[in-house]
Length: 168
Image (cartoon, rainbow, N blue to C red):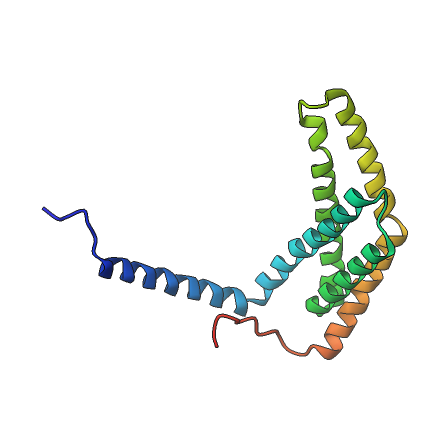
């Protein structure tokens, strides 16, 4: 009858097998340009949402610094896309992700039992503030930043990035 106890050598083999699987997965992710672009868009939207969260929960409206941070996020993400069409589609998708995250989190008070009457008021007020702080001037500015970034990326960032940070 085999023993249920595994010795340290069995665990070492399992860890090495898992490490090998992880290296294969990271290798595929870093070499696949499409997957990198697909991962960039939700990260882009999430970072826009994070900056707007920071601003909207500290101030009534975003400050110039918050708008500047988002501008540079869009510039860098557009440059990483390296194509105007991809940057345009990525920008619209990232903004949709950011707005959806912001509205989703702003809706939490309406669903909580802490303040049933005030929750819907807070939700509607936050939605108005979110749309006023993102449309129309900031939206157009961020769109232009993404397009400029895509032009710069297409011109100066030749080839694909080597994101293989796991190898030394």
